[in-house]
Image (cartoon, rainbow, N blue to C red):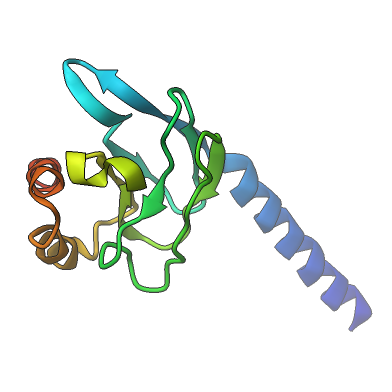
Amino acid sequence: MKVFLKSILLASAGIALSVSASAKEVSVKMLNQSGGEKYVFDAELVRLKPGDSLVFEATDRGHNAETIPGMLPQGAKRFKTGFNKSETVTFSAPGIYGVKCLPHFGLGMIAFVIVGDPVNLEEVKTAAEKLPPKAKARALALLEQVK
């Protein structure tokens, strides 16, 4: 019995190590300007697998990254990075995460992180309709790229 239990524990540890070893880390810059657009995340649409991490890089001062209410998959936890700080967020729950820069949200500084399948696409589209005008326009344009 002890040998069997030990085998299960070792196998579980091996699976956990292989999952963390295969997870990747992607970076997104928080910028005052890029490609003629002001106040943007570069990239604005990021695709990840569950367990992958995203580094929000404080490239330009005055930015943060945080979840947008109504734009989270079921079971996902909200997050909020500090201002002028690069921080890493790990995404586990499949679906679409809406992300904003709090001071520049009204100016359209948003991004979407798609983890696995976009299971909450319709909910996110509904929430996008309630955003400030510039954020709404950018959100709807980005959501058109989600399939």
